[in-house]
Amino acid sequence: MLRVAVIGGGPSGSCAAEILAKAGIKTWIFERKLDNAKPCGGAIPLCMVSEFDLPESIIDRKVRNMRMISPSNREVDISLDKVYGETENEYIGMCRREVMDAFMRDRAAELGANLVNGLVTKIETGTNRQGPYKLTYSDYTNGESTGETKTLEVDLIVGADGANSRVAKAMDAGDYNVAIAFQERIKLPEKEMKYYEDLAEMYVGTDVSPDFYGWVFPKYDHVAVGTGTMQKNQSLIKSLQVGVRERAKKRLVNGEVIKVEAHPIPEHPRPRRVVGRMALVGDAAGYVTKSSGEGIYFAAKSGRMCAEEIVDASKGGEKIPTEADLKKYLKKWDKKYGTTYKVLEILQNIFYSNDAAREAFVEMCDDMDVQRLTFDSYLYKTVVAMKPWQQLKLTLLTIGSVLRGRALAPENYKPVPSTVRDDDEVNKMLAVSTIKGGIKVEKNKISA
Image 1 (cartoon, rainbow, N blue to C red):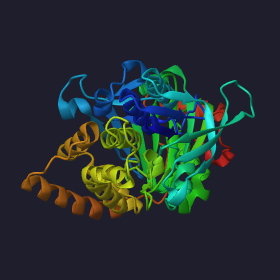
Image 2: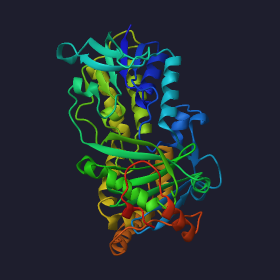
Image 3: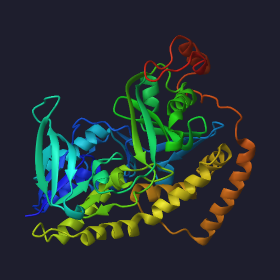
Image 4: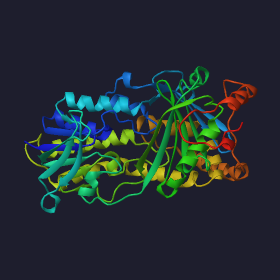
């Protein structure tokens, strides 16, 4: 009987383990931090809820309104009611990763996967990395801080262990650049939290990120406020978080930081994602999109597709798949999503290059055709072919927006106004207290 180790218990590892366990394949899933809360916006597309049979209990908020805020504080509201009509059928799910990941991981265990609260510390890959594979790991099941050293031999490994993947190192998958995500979870006064009930905000500008965006996403009883940037700018990450807080401070007034998180995320796929009988999925493989920074759906999907290929090639666990068998998963993945990744990379290079382009990007988001195309592709992961007149319109919008954007790009950045308090009230509150806790913010950065 085929023996498979899935290293990493996030969405990619959990989905892989679930498929393998359902097929009756002997499966172990390793996760060191069972209460792990990855610093992530936590937004999931609607199609993921049905495709991966996720219960409503793991969804904190059903966001139906997005607000894009440009460098000059131009605000564009994107409402699903306007795009799809007044219905609750369409929404963006906002989740806490510790809740969603635990559900998916526990479900895999209930289906028969052996869940190990452990950290894999060494992987012996056999001759020419073809296995069998000997894992040395620290088992923390008993709650000891040091863990008990154990070993396990398996025939195949699925590496779902994130950007700093130990499996990738063992298989010599090659390096890749990583972006840095930084996030603070902030509890807000009742008025401000009510404002974010079904609304998410995205801020763009050099002050919040030179190559990405900042976000304020609602969760169960707080908002996640964060930003991200490419590896070359990682030394700026805390100052960029200050930029997000400064731009949104009148909407986050008197908030209190309850958690600070930072984590690397891949900028592009690794040079090698299958070596021998080892395959990478999720962040370990580099499956995070440019422009949107989306990774959760693609992580889960890659884990499932990889596991399905293993089940098929092994005839339900009767034989050990070859390296060529595992590479079929890559061919299917690249055929299905390669274009999506390339298009989003092009969009990021165009619209996140400078503040003029960011102004143009936000202006374009005010167009209903752009909104529909964007949400169709995000919510349902479908690429809808544009009609000739739509293509022409989009081209003219891009050219016109960029030309106007060059004149509108600001020389400095101002905080957006509160939407629930008048300016005098907010300024009085800010004079007494701004956001409590989290990163250190200089006094001159928080003046009203």
